[in-house]
Amino acid sequence: MVERIALIGLSGSGKSAVAPLVAARLGWMALDTDDLVVRRFGMPIAEIFARFGEPVFRAAEREALLEALRNERVVVATGGGIVLDERNWVALRSDTAVVHLTARLETLASRLRAQVSGENGAVRPLLAGALEERLRSLWEQRRNLYRRADVTVETDDRTLDAVADEIVRAVRSLSERGFVPFLSLAGGSGRSDLFVRSGLLEAVGELVRRRWPNVRRAFVITDDHVERLWGEPVRRALERAAFQVTTLTIPAGEQSKNLGVVERLLDQLLESGIERSDVVVALGGGVVGDIAGFVSSIVLRGVGLVQVPTSLLAMVDASVGGKTGVDHRLGKNLIGTFYQPHLVIADPVVLSTLPEAERRSGWAEVVKHAMIECTATDSTEPSLLPLLMSRAFSAWWEAGALDEVVRRNIAIKAAVVAADERESGLRRILNYGHTLGHAVEAASDYRLRHGEAVAIGMRAVARLAQRLGACSAEVVRLQDELLDAAGLPRSIDLPIEAVLERLRYDKKVEGGVPTWILPTRPGRVVIRRDVPLDAVRDVARSVLAPHSEVGGPLPRRRMP
Image (cartoon, rainbow, N blue to C red; front, top):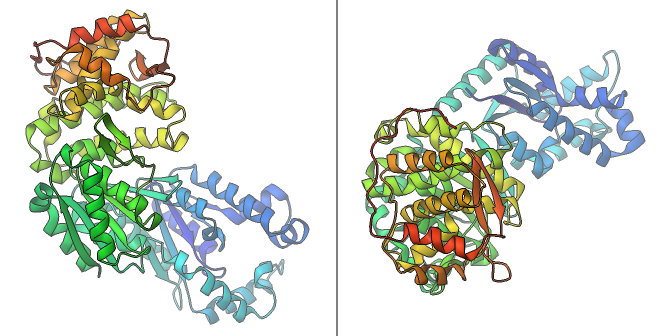
């Protein structure tokens, strides 16, 4: 079950009356944003409007909404205008089912007149005057916003109990199908809603349609490998939701991450007459996600973007956070933009087709998130590390087992992105293992998979941290065991000078000095730039050697 239910709709739709009934059926509590505002000011809403004006009321209303939604197992009756502030939708979307209560305008007017004739005779200031005309005006202004709700419930000629029963049934159905985003982020390119559930690929069209009720066309960008596996199911899902679908295919692999491919995609989109109201659906792994995200951010100065990741690496990392781009001959991901996807739809079922090597490669990013979790989320104890240690690597690929792992990874990354969207500070910790890892990847001419290179980079920085006195040998051993359990390499035979030369082109270099993310204890890392080159060279030499055998299954042990 979702954690919260929010009722939206025009005044008179019954939100305040229905919320306690829904809460009682679920054993939850009910809150009303209007009540919270009145309690704060110590006066009726009409007086708040009269004395302080609508802007002050809207600010207080937003604070009341945030206060209410900080709770779990709560039904929140919201003010009719809560939908007007786009920032409110981020709060309304995270693990919250949004229910729109509606009725005929004459019904709403009748209910509001009855309220006016009650004890306090209060009426919403925005509804003063010709009531039906004001309601009609507000409806025209807000109707498209109310259409964003997960479900709409008609309240005309129905008892409050009947309405409450329908809400409970509808929300349970939505929750069971995974149709409520478990998390929502605010970004420079708009709100990003994140969905994770096994079997969700079949609902791609419905979820995209819910986000963009009036969009006509969807352009699917994928690679020739993924297109054979999942292109047709996604196309059918979009067409069932009444989208006109055009599929654009690129060659699979890192070699496609270049400006030539971007230019060809732009030609195809523009020649097809793409409009600002259309959406791009990135169907694939990290390469497709990076390229499609980059193209979406620059064509017509930005169109709607949906990430449908098909690799573990893309699900837990690349599809979330808004980094896009392509490689340059001097380094990886040196050309790109920050552009948050508006939807991320992750279905772990598609990972069943991944080759074993790709599963292992993606697991490196899972371990990375486990090593940075406490710093990322400001938590005292890690939760992902114990989860990863609870079963063997092979067992995670059983049906439904990965859903929670993917959610926790996304939540860790999302916490960092929410605090630092454009990588000016905290977000740098997401590069744990990547400083040397990217250099290794580039020096191998990208023959090494990204996760394999990152695993080598993580092993190196843990040893670097131990050498500098930042962490204990036990932290190094714990990380090694997690990486060994997935069969990730311990080293790679590459010329050390070629790798160190690539460090010069790392995106985090400042004044010619690389930025290093070093572990201090399980789940905690620090950002440092005062790392001696001699120490880097010595540690790099230890992982740039031809002895890449890996260990066996992860033993059951306690964290240090």
